Image 1: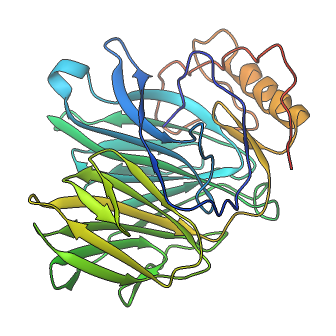
Image 2 (image 1 turned 45 degrees about the vertical axis):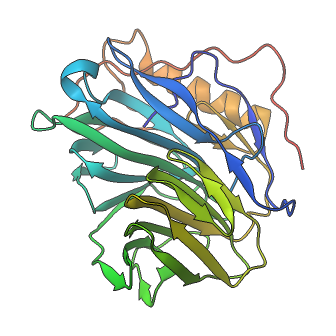
Length: 324
């Protein structure tokens, strides 16, 4: 997915806050297309930029594709990050410049590594009537951010506990572990709670965690939260208490140790300096050319996708700052 903000903000992200539990509410952002499908963005926010290495959370749907036009994101670039696609309903076709052609389906995770540079497209399929899911980004640490692009697909099996069903797509939880490799320790899981369920999860106390609520009301470690909220929990606790309200609850549980590196995130790029971001943009614009077709270069060309690429927005007048 591309961050299609008309004026994308520079994000200088630094992990490690221990101020306690925070409830982050989303802001609506148009994803693009002729009828502008809208998404709910909770990360980055004014209050917080990172949860572990997780640096971007878009949550969308249930979206009537007949009205919104669905997801139509033509070829666009990424550097220095991984995209993690997770659907509740619908189907999305993925093509990237590393030669991968795959589909995102409910309960199946697609992880794309941008590394030094990749371009890809995401289009909801004709069979999709309702689109509902989340697009997540993970910042790559300095040692891995300039590596080769890649792609991994995994179908996690459901894990059951009283009042709870879980699918662990990254990391480990409830005795289940995902085989998907990551550059830093991460946790990613979908949880379904029965009405009124009270669940205690053993979690890594070195991790900070985020609970993104898709449906139902939930109390997270004593903090009430509503659908579409993102609840942040700092490191330190070895257990996480979840209590569902009167309706079934669906949530995504994300986590990882504080990232420990400052990053500059602008548009679809994660870098470390102003000069890097300028160079990423220059390289992409060189490939975009007149916008009719994408030429080869640093980011490559998604196999089999002839749609005109998305040009990069103008950089802000101010210098992008790296903060430590």
